Image 1 (tube, rainbow, N blue to C red):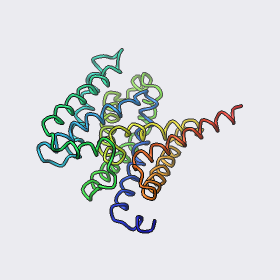
Image 2: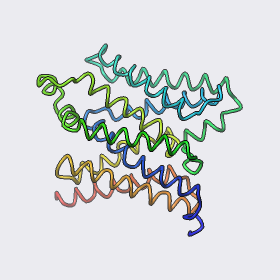
Image 3: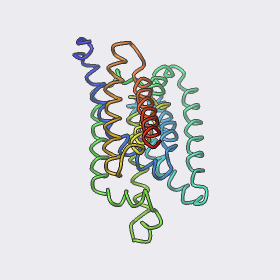
Image 4: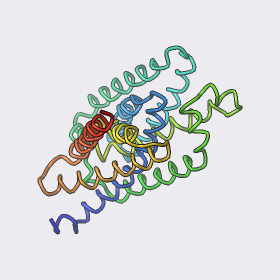
Amino acid sequence: MLDILSSDFFQRAMLGGLLIGVTAPLIGIFLVLRRLSMIGDTLSHVTIAGVALGFLIEVYPLAAGLVFAVAASFAIEKLRKAYKSYAELSIAIIMSGGVALASLFFTLGMGYNTDVMSYLFGSIYTLDVNDLYLVGGVTVVVITVISLFFKELFLLSFEEDAASVSGLPVKWINMIITVLTALVVSTAIKIVGALLVSALLTIPVAASLLLARSFRSAIVLSVILSEIAVVGGLMLAGVFNLAPGATIVLLLISFLTLALVGKKGFSS
C-alpha cells in the first residue's frame, strides 16, 4: 500500500483525479439543471476523434482532442439556435459526427488503435507532466469563469427566459458553459475514459441535489462526493488491481444509491 502511495505515477494520477473531481461537478450542475446532461457523452465522442487524429498526425493527442471538443461546442450552440424547438437534435447530430470521425481515424491509423482505446476506458496511471499542466490550466479557467459569472450562470440555469428579459447576454453565457464543458470533458477522458466521463459530470450532482438544501450547498456537496470517489476509487483500484475509472464511477453510483435510500427513508 505504501509503495503505491509513494509511486510517482500514482501521485500524478491522484493529482489529476483531484483536479477533475473539482471541475466536473462544477460544470455538471449547470448542465443537469439545464437538461443538457447528455452533452458530456457527445463531446467525449468528439474528443476521441481528435485524440485519434492526434495519434495519426503525431501531435499531442489530448491537445488535439481538446481542439475538437471546443470546435464541437461551438457547433452545438449554432445548431441549438437553428433548431430552437428541438435543441436536443444538436447533441445527436454532433455525437453522430464524432463517432463517424473517430471510426474513420481508427481505420486510417490501425497501428494506434491500442493507444486510442486507453482514452475510451481511461488511463489515469499514464498521466504525465504535460497532462497535469493541461488539466491544471483547465481547472484554473473553469473556477475563474464560474466565480466571475456565478450569478449569471445561476439565473440562466433556472430561468433562461427571465435571464434574457433582464438583459443578460444569454447567447454568450450559453457558449461559455458549452466551451467549459468541452474543456473539462477533453481533459477528463484520460482519467475516467470517454465512456464514463459523463458519469463524473452528472452522478455527483444527482446525489447532491437529493441531499442539499440550497444551490450553493449542492455545488459544494457534489464536489465533496466527487473528490471522495476519486480518492477512494484510486486507492481501491491500486490495492486490488482494478480499473481506476470504473471504480471511481461505481463508487459514485453507490453514493447516489445511498442518497436515494436515505431520502426515501427520511421522507417516509
